[in-house]
Image 1 (cartoon, rainbow, N blue to C red):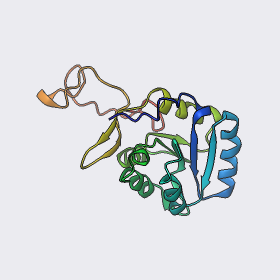
Image 2: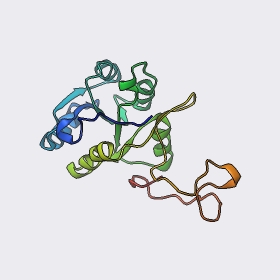
Image 3: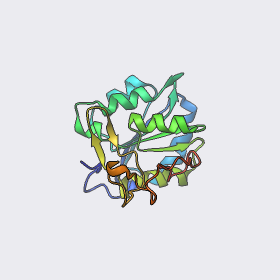
Length: 188
C-alpha cells in the first residue's frame, strides 16, 4: 500500500495541513512561514488531545508537528495516529520538527512512523521541500504487526534482496555501518 495523499492533491495549494505545536509563539512563527506557500487550509492544535481529535476528523492531508510539545514527546501522538482505525488518518504524512536531531532521535522518529523530519527553526524552503517530497515522492506505506508507517528506507537499492543470501544491498554484500549527518534528507 502506498502513502498517496490523493489523486487530486498535486501541489501544496491543494493541501489541508494540521500544525501541532505546544507553543503559541512557535505556531504563529510557523503560520508566517507556511501561509505564503498557499496551502488550502492550515489549522492548529496545541496538544496531543486536540491533535488527535482534529486528525480523526479526516479533514487533513498532512501533519506538521513539533517533536516535543508541552514538555512531552510527540512520538506517542505519531504512534496513536499510525494505530488509528481510520485508514486516511493512519496513512497521513507526518513531518516532525525539532531544534536538533541526533541519530537515535531520527531512528526513533522513523520507527514511530514519521515521514520526514526537519530542524527548527525551519525555513520556508525546507518546509516546502518536505511538503513537495510527500506529494511528489511518497514512500511505500507499510502495514505489519510490528510497524505501521512509511518505508524507513529513503533510497531503493537494486541489489537488496531482503537480507536473503546475505545480500543487504551493498556491492560486497556487507552491512554499511557508515552514519550520515543527522537531518540529511537522504539519510537512509
